[in-house]
Length: 77
Image (cartoon, rainbow, N blue to C red; front, top):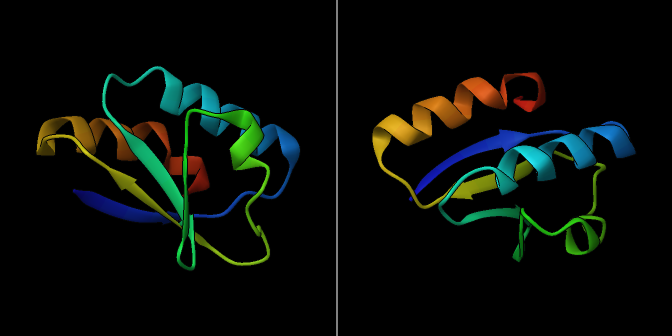
């Protein structure tokens, strides 16, 4: 499991991140405190608290993780 932090500042940011996560063949979760949701579901992603950075957890190998970091660069904090 690999992790990094992101911040979303608009609905469009959330939408774009869900699209990015949905294109990956492995599980990606986003956590706010102890509340973790499936990053591929727009509905549950909108239930998170965006007032502080969120933790992304990806179940993938190192090579895939590096590609995910590159794709998510604009959201990373």
